[in-house]
Image (cartoon, rainbow, N blue to C red):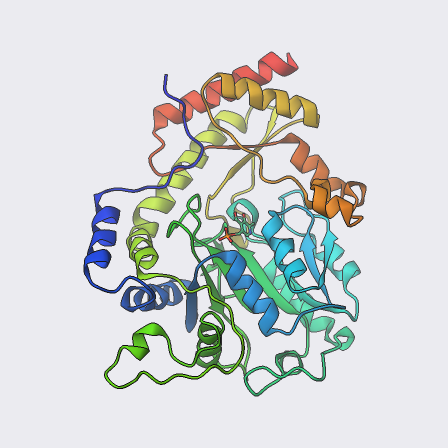
Length: 410
Ligand SMILES: Cc1ncc(COP(=O)(O)O)c(C=O)c1O
């Protein structure tokens, strides 16, 4: 029996032809396909402007830089997330302040409230597995706590001071998992100040590697101006991109500041355009059907705790099926995964909480400060969810998991 992989991308003739067409078009870096992808992403998210870049990591690091976050500043992130969420805070020299999560794996707004200090510049909630964090609640909290906010006075970005302008902590949503998820009936992207998506190879919507930012800042911020500024930030601070410079006689450019280099290529956007076109018609329904099938196998079996995919306000993008084995210790969970692997099924754990990772442990973060994160992690097993996974394969995964649990826990 061939191994069931964890999360292969859906690559078919349409994807291959779209990339081949881009290759043959004579324009392979950022160009018309990227611009079209951005327009369609913005329409999908219901925001004025989206910029497509080369990863969530670089896109969101630009946001922290744009907001002038640096040494002495604090950014609140959940202890339960992928390292990228906290690493970008380290990259700009600020301090990640870790807080615990709720039973649905998303950041606990009460814990965020307790962690806010005059040094807090940003909150990064994470839509883990595709279930949106309580972003509207966090936006309200950011507003309510604005008297505590202490903006940097000497900050100057594109002629203004964004911290003074906003007058409160920035809410940057880590929606790496949740493209297409909804809060109050609206797509993720239209709730936080800025939302970062990932289009990495394993994500629901992929461009091989890639990411995007949806801008939703209140007036007087202008989405078009923000787009232009982030575009410049992503291209070394250069006043013109490669496409603009190819126009006859338009060679001259300037550099206003030493920017970064994290633009998306048209080859990536070609994949993204195909993915986006069939996202609601194919990708989402299939992922949901797989998760529903897992639910019907595990929800009635009290050895398991099934993940939350919806409540009165939120609907998940069904990115991960984060199953929990009730009462299992970390060592038992690990043994169950080994037993599942012997049955030729690939599963995963999302994620090892930050305080358990060598680097963050070395900085003094302690797992005991975030008991819920540890409890969730120690029992978690992510099951395969992807477009090409057949119903028969889902049944094979279910049987492998149940047999493995019986083998380890008796
Ligand atoms: C929760 C979370 N945030 C951020 C990222 C980083 O995304 P990227 O690989 O596009 O930089 C990931 C990637 O897996 C992730 O899972």
